[in-house]
Length: 263
Image (cartoon, rainbow, N blue to C red; front, top):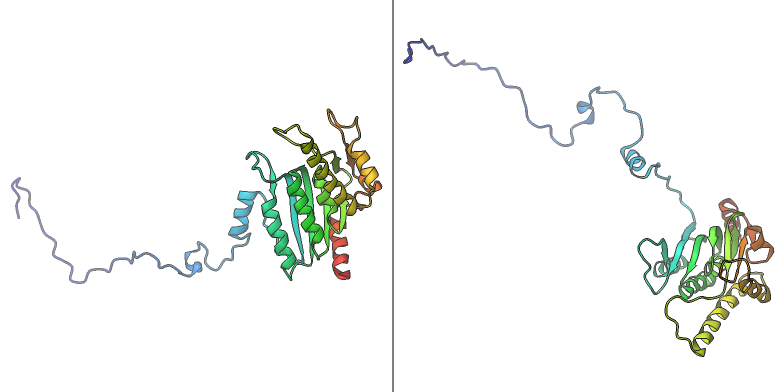
């Protein structure tokens, strides 16, 4: 056959028996992992993907699941009450704590409660409500003051069946204070005085400190800048009878286990 340029073209007849094309179909899902490994039969050792993701995201391996009859609650930052605090504040919301405590009281699996405190205080009525619930629970509870248990954190610390404080932790005792606009009338003072009596009565009723000594610490001058009150650190809180014992997590869990057995 010639084309218009004078070049000869030839045609190749079709092969009656063409070679089969290689199978390029996509591998079905669920194919044996060994067929897709570069070295079939060689076992790959190392951490599971979930653990590696946890290390990548959180910087630590996930904790092993431990079945325990002790539930741990943390009260950190500022105790948020009826007013919502700014978002940059680290807070513990009392409307979150109260349902948890009620659920723990009803749970048959939980035999004891461990409460860790590192709080600067906060709303007086919210903190007192949390303390009253803890004190009224039928299950044994142990508190540990870690960094600080200041202001309304003091009633929460003593509300448990037994209390610990680490040697470097501090507790600030001071009178009730209000922020914002206050109506300067005798009724306002009487209201504050009654609220203060509620806090003092609760602390005295759930610790070994006397009311006279607690009020003396509350109104002491010279320790706090531009304020009245007292800062207690570790052993001082135990010597005054406010906290039962100096100790940390190990001592607290041991004590709680003994109380559970006795209970």
